[in-house]
Image (cartoon, rainbow, N blue to C red):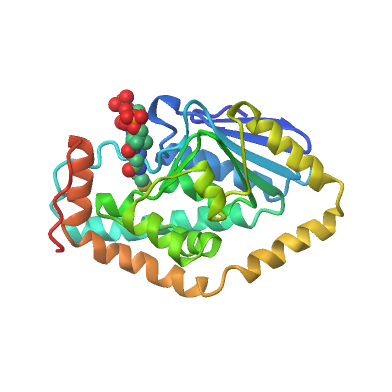
Length: 266
Ligand code: COA
């Protein structure tokens, strides 16, 4: 099938997905997300595919949510805007849950920048392999928003609260080796060996019992997702509250104008 913003290559039992907006560092706009959702929905019943790889075209895996055009004048109805921001969370939550709960083994082959929403795919994949050029970060608080889509507890689960706080609260960008040392990625490889490393991992898993592997994944996912029921209730409400403040709009304007935002805490 042809997509506009992703490339999907099928070679059973592997489906290779490449985020493909290299001129925008594979920033995730609504269309790209919709295309990914369509692929993920198809995978639910596609038993000929047992492995899915994700990577990015060009120098980024993904530089996060597409910020273009977000810095325009504030809409007249702030309550309506905040409500829309709340509703967008449902898309993000569904996306994360659907990808995380695929029965296939999923592997993120991180080739470059993996920032914010662009780190969301890797953190819900089963395995993360980094090129030496990979850079990981969560820039959200720097632009007046927080790390939503259920990504904050998942990242905290992967690296623990100390590293999660450094990444999320200070926006520190980790290179591949720091990501390896804090447990964010499983392996760092030379850039030109990234996809070969993903194939090697698939080869290793492919000799194991298929049903046992599927069940192991489900049990590990169930064991590592406590309290997500609360999260799905609270996070949209927190996003709505945040968007009733001036900070997200100031962050978006500053991003557009390539200047430092001025946050006032209200
Ligand atoms: N949304 C929309 N466009 C983006 C983008 C994003 N999140 N990230 C990068 N781009 C675009 C840039 O606007 C630029 O487009 P242009 O050439 O049409 O102006 C292009 O991708 C290249 O980015 P540029 O900033 O010129 O590259 P760089 O090497 O100087 O910097 C980054 C790379 C990743 C540090 C920088 O692009 C960045 O900070 N991106 C935003 C990260 C972010 O805050 N993401 C949102 C988190 S949810």
